[in-house]
Length: 366
Ligand code: GAL
Image 1 (cartoon, rainbow, N blue to C red):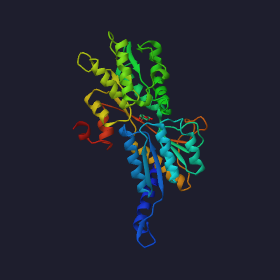
Image 2 (image 1 turned 180 degrees about the vertical axis):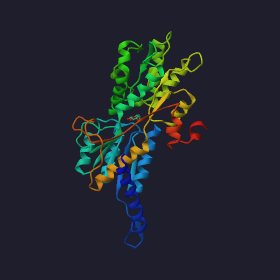
Image 3 (image 1 turned 60 degrees about the vertical axis):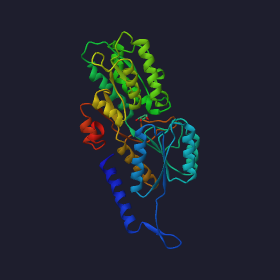
Image 4 (image 1 turned 180 degrees about the horizontal axis):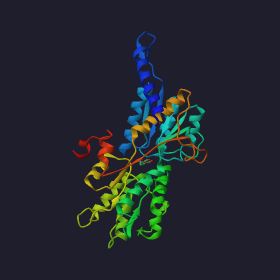
């Protein structure tokens, strides 16, 4: 977010605090003082099974409260119907705005038509909402770049540009219903494709297309089963050198499958393996040397962007964006604010995550 926007959010926060201190109270019929709220923001998150979404929800709640809003934060536990019902509930309760990280980006068309009928603006959070005109703005990261960073780590670690190879690799992608999954995969393939074409990288399973490598529900269990099958089929006499994994929860399950297969010993080291979200468990694995890399996306910053967008819309202003072309949702180009992701591995987790205040050294190494 630009300095200007940050300053605006900070100023708005200060103004609200001042108002609360001076005159932010009304009085009820009996003359007792009651807090004045700017209204409730509905925040629909996909699941509590990944700590990142829990943190995203917490960060938004805190930041909205600083601006004088209340929040209704709901988690759908990866169930589409549950999420639709939760959003409907927020509309029924006259939410001032909706912030939605979709379980299925294509399944919200009907419920968001109702939000539009009720004049409630909708912000797609992290994941684009598809097939509807009724999404006002998109707050996310540069998702193509996430994949570029993941594959860049693999290329660096295997020294693909100079080492003779060939090296073996297996590819994993996220949930096909999540618009981000294709962006991550395409970003990664933009780096890996030349090496796959030249034969320096070999996918022994032959499973290389996005459709063949997606992971339903971003599920670690699904990924673990697939990794186990691949190891049994294609790597009984050849070593696996690298795994493109799109997300930390999947990476940890892939590592579990590899360890069961005997990887992780001096004589048979683990392949280079990527991830995403800088989840605490995975950052510990990076410090311990099992997972190679993760892509850090600061959820505090993403929350700031979404909060700024909602607050601007409610106040009749225009939210700041920095991209208007990259994200077409099938109906329109959705104006977006995209933050930059950061690749984190053993060499920089201390500077990025500990010095950056995301985790304490004790949490990671203690
Ligand atoms: C994606 C998100 C990733 C990761 C994944 C699984 O939409 O961009 O950061 O969290 O979902 O939850």
